[in-house]
Length: 249
Image 1 (cartoon, one colour):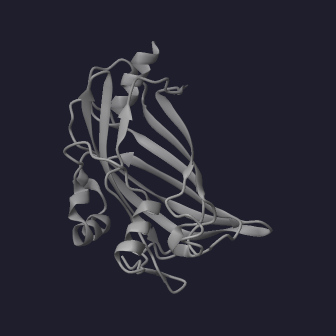
Image 2: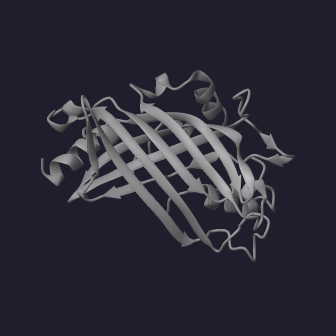
Image 3: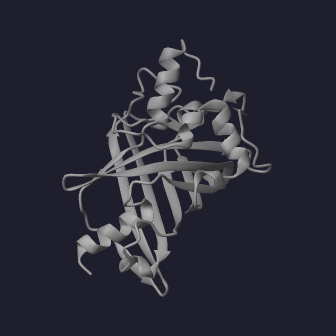
């Protein structure tokens, strides 16, 4: 197969070539680490990404909204307070990507294939330490995102616009801004797994109800490209600056 063939197979796995909305749902846990301390589970984590793939000259635009929620690690209930601090959940609108054909690492696993993406991030932090000393450890945001998408091996030869898929996601990141860890060494590791849903209606009812009650627009993908993307760090800054310092959800 050519790299272009693999890229098209990945597009069928991650989204749908006919522009239909695609929902991924995932669940997992978040672990804290710090020098000379044991790893400990601090949160459960569950989220959804609703996307729409739009064909452009030479590639695609992946238009998405992404919502995710920090859960009590034992009861798996959505948390609103952690150590007397308000929890700020993930409301990334948009979380868009522009795709030009690129080499997608592919591993054949018998009747499955795995597309793997390793994305190191390093860019000026939206929360400079001088202005946000309680919420930021560094003036450079650094993280590592590791994705794996698993699909039937038939995706390499099918003309279907979309194929069933499962996924895994690992993320290494700094402490979340709302945790108020300041410049404490250490950070978080997210470890999650999920699948491509047949429709948004297959998302667990509790999660759909929380989205409907807070930001119902997250049940659908954006209709058109907008920028810049939202992240947990930019969203926190908007809450802090727009709410007179309050970060209550």
